Image 1 (cartoon, rainbow, N blue to C red):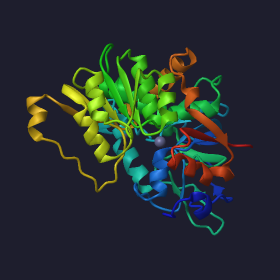
Image 2 (cartoon, rainbow, N blue to C red):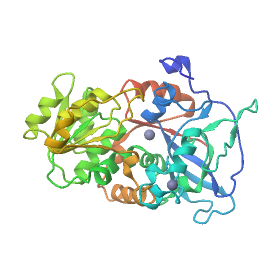
Image 3 (cartoon, rainbow, N blue to C red):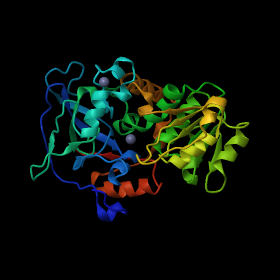
Image 4 (cartoon, rainbow, N blue to C red):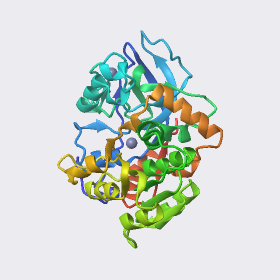
Amino acid sequence: MEKPAPYAQSKPLVVDEVTLQRPGPGEGLVKVVGAGLCHSDLSTIDGSRPRPMPMVLGHEAAGIVQEVGSHVQDLRPGDHVVFSFVPMCGRCIYCATARPALCENGGRANGAGTLLDGGRPFQDRQGRILHHHLGVSAFSQYTVAAQESLIKIDPTVPLENAALFGCAVLTGVGAVVNTAKVEPGMAVAVFGLGGVGLSVVMGAQLARAYPIVAVDTVDAKLELARKLGATHLVNARERDPVQSIKDLTNGGAHYTFEAVGNEQVLHQAYQATRRGGTTVTIGLPHPSRMLSVPAVGIVADERTIKGSYMGSAVPRRDIPRFLELYQAGLLPVDLLLTRTIALDEINEGFDALAHGEAVRQVVRFSH
Ligand SMILES: [Zn+2]
Ligand SMILES: [Zn+2]
């Protein structure tokens, strides 16, 4: 893959007919209704997050179970589901200690581009076996997933909106409530206002943080952050975000969140964190990038740098929990959804995402 932008011309994603195996033991066949375009798909397309190719991409989605294999206990045809992009094996030490985002068997399968049991159910017209994307592979009308990747949800939630709970909302709100555990009145700053960063803003509002400072270089995203609960906006092209946050928060935020995936921005987030504070890193920088900070400050200022993967979530607990907050009007997730697109507009969609012209676009499948 690794074709240059603009993707509308280079077409790194090819829309074609593939064949899909029936679900094996412990698996379900799902009709995908909505699948979101996420920055980590973009990182797979541009090669900054290398994955085995060729692959059926897409990891943020919701759909309806059509058929289940043997040994599937809790799902049946007709159930509405959101996909978890880390399958939780339930047996490893991380699953056993309520940290399934770090699941060893799930991580191994995701790295290899297979389902949890090693299967790869998609094949192209030439008979080539295609890799699976994070156990989901949602840019397809139908997909097969392990039951450990499928979270049953309330069927009254529109599935285009529910899709966003699989990645953006789980990761962003989870970073606030699970990783940082922000408390009322704590000062929060968020760097990078994509779907995840804006979900951090929503989570901070839910946690009654104050002030909530949102940082980006695109005014439209800053305005959206205001609607989602940001109390102060900083355009990093116009003002130094570190100094601005220090001024707005009496010397630095208690919690800063980096949702760009850039080590220089992470460095700024660290500098904008006050003594005793916590810098939460959510974005995924290229594996070759390093972060350099004064080592003594970690001790003398009692600073914490905390990684947050998939919002440190327990998807079976948190996806239904966040959906309930959404239904109660406490998480205005609909505002993240810029537009729905058709599958054959997907390359243009990734151009719009790369240029910051869209927060979340969801492929809506016609069946
Ligand atoms: Zn994602
Ligand atoms: Zn596990």
